[in-house]
Image (cartoon, rainbow, N blue to C red; front, side):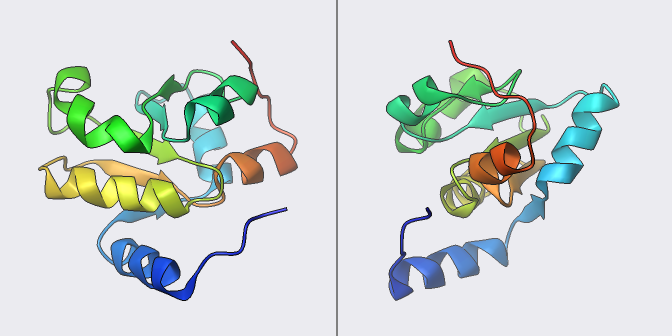
Length: 125
């Protein structure tokens, strides 16, 4: 079950969503199946990542994304799709990366929860 979010948090996310691009779980699956090239980042906490993540994803927790992104992805035009548990934290992370100059950042609405609920594959390391 999804956590209840406070009104100020929802407002912050909604404002970020007005500045970023979003896609659906189905969009990401279709792009993966088509062999499209993009980086897929899981911005959840370490324990969430360890419990399972999307195939091909790399872990870059929201708490360190802004600090580590320049070394991890030096090209500002690299296409990246970010996801979290449900699409809130990834929207905030996408907005932060947009503010840092990254031009092709997308947040996956529905997140890991939506991916799993749709029956798509999940991996554990």
